[in-house]
Length: 118
Image (cartoon, rainbow, N blue to C red; front, side, top):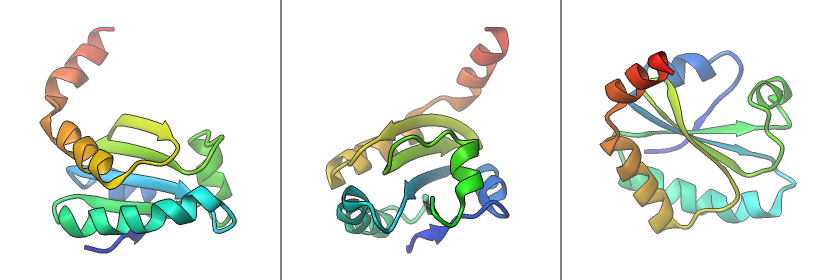
């Protein structure tokens, strides 16, 4: 599976209409982003059931601002529309695979109920 370009227009629907979504906030001038890009692309080929989105922070400044992106690359993980992971910095392939496994293993219904009670 290839990565999907996310914009202000399709970000919310992509995140909310899919079970697991990873999002890479990046920019073309960012060296670490360029190093992470092939790792992210390779992972998308191993996980057909996950949407791999990319947000170009130069083209979608409003989206980057809305998510308070301070450093890139920033990786976010969503499960059924809920943000469950956020980290600035590079991940290697094994870390991406482990992250996906952990997101899939979450009992999202229990987490949502717990958040409602808090």
